[in-house]
Amino acid sequence: MKIAFHRILSAIALTVLLPFGMASAQSADPFEYGWNLDGDASELRFLSIKKSKVAETSSFATLSGLITEDGLAQVRVLLDSVDTKVDLRNVRMRFLFFETFRFPEAVITTQLSPELLTDLHMTRRKEIELPYTFTLRGVTLERTTDVAVTLIDNDRVVVSSITPIAFTLEELDLEEGRRKLEEAANVDITPLGVVSFNFVFDRAQAGTPPDLPEATFTPAAVALEDKGNMTEEACLGRFEILSKTGNIFFASGSTRLDDKSLPLLENLYDIVNRCPTFRLEIAGHTDSVGSDQQNQNISERRAASVVGWLTDKGIPRDRLTSVGYGESRPIVENDTPQNRARNRRIEFTALAE
Image 1: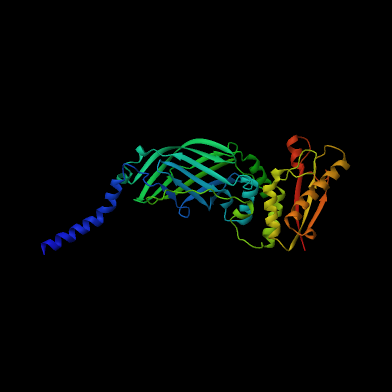
Image 2: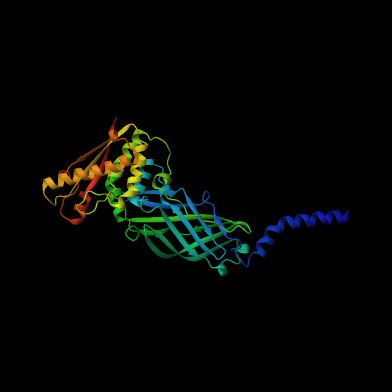
């Protein structure tokens, strides 16, 4: 009887202490096997302010990341997955602010020091100062922030911001995007973004190191929205937003489309396909440099170039109309190089069938 009771106590003790024993065995190497980000459980949020006093919180739906066995950590953010909870606001953020057709992702990278985390299995939570790099729109910033590292169990850990992290839009090359958003939404936007995060990682399996495959970014495929045909409201809103991007380019004095235009044109093609009940007017506009007749001619030919590109992709010609307005419809005064560049543009207007 005593032997049986002793065995029961030993089994209970083993059950209770096993997780802690396992963690202790790995304490000398907190990155053993590496870690994979749980994208569904993780969060990356940013706060923006409009009208000087209205705060809005948005997030990103698609995150991926890892921590290698050497402690190198990386989190990648699919910018097309920006989620403001309002469809057309998401589209404005993608096309006008982040320009995701040119810059599909943001990347956060840091090197974790094992010396700072070897006792995590005992403390369960540690606050550490963490240097990191943040890359967005081709701009890389080096910063330091305080994070909390919390061990949920031996195979799950959470890395979260302790205080929000502030970025100016100027240092991230987002001032032009702010201007476009302000014009599209007719609001004033504070030139500051405040970011917070909560990244959840699961330990990789022995013999299966963490993996972060290269994502394939094809502009028509990555947008996180319903597939298939769009509603009338969605179509009208998207064509209006596309007109404000300013990302249809031509060689100087030419009507030939520049290759820099292709990312936006691919998105335009996708949207036209998904709005089959609409015809599309494609309008060319110029600045005031040159004669009226020259500007009229080049605006017509540039609009026709866009129509030709879409028909070559398979859009029926009878769904497209090209028109040139020359210099007759400026959106700003032609008094600076920047304003003249804004007046040289292609606009898209949906016409009901």
